[in-house]
Image (cartoon, rainbow, N blue to C red; front, side, top):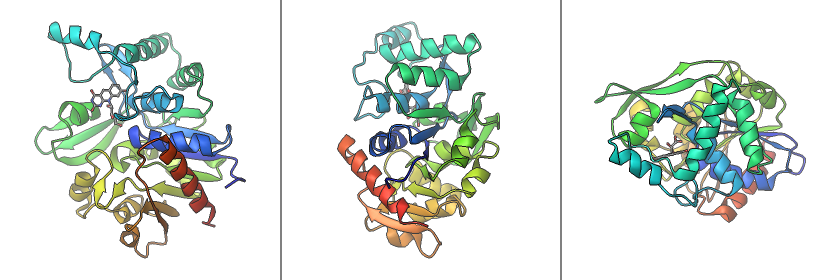
Length: 310
Ligand code: FO1
């Protein structure tokens, strides 16, 4: 583990960010590069919102709301109350302090600064040393074809409709050009980690960028399972696996979803048999991150496991 100089982690929001908090502490300061899903990004109240980047930023800076996983710990919702009184859109809860992030980012984008440059600046201002890259500078929106509600942009499906409409298909609308540094980071990595994020809506958008999957195929890639005992740690993943793959949710289904990409998967103790004879190494342990000490313990165990894989 100690000779790991360059580690890349692909991450969505809450679950991925919790692992990152541990990885950032388990690894030397300059060893970790994070590539974050921006398929969730959207415009709301005229502002550019990047939920997964912000979840990662607030978590790594220690400012995040630990139990909820997204947004800031010390937060009020006065602006949201006023929007509600005016009859505006109140289904997406932007906090008063969180609004500061969106105002600065939206203004910088309007001035022509790139999302990756803004991201680097905001993380630095919050004292985060980890290198964090958005998957792309231009928009690529995750779209959800549903049985009951037609096609919905991700946040409309996930937050507004509470992920209730059954998913028929997930697709990506927009750029296929990765942000500067994404491919180079993967190509230079000793180890690539896929965080415990939803493969369909958090990791696949990153894999859809030109050259990302091909670059990963040439590296050692390990994942932390987002499925524990047949259920998703958070969100609608178990139902999605059942409807989109026609099999029960399990770490084995995650391995098969990534189609040969994974050299190893770290799963909840007892879930090992689901992976079967896939050629993918398996290690069991405790995978649910209840607090920051658990994130660090799990990050260390994941790195130790990865070191055993040739
Ligand atoms: N998730 C919710 O379920 N409801 C919300 O009102 C909500 C607001 C919100 C505001 C800022 C932000 O950065 C994230 C927010 N999230 C909210 C989380 C977010 O939409 C999702 O968890 C991710 O997009 C999925 O990774």
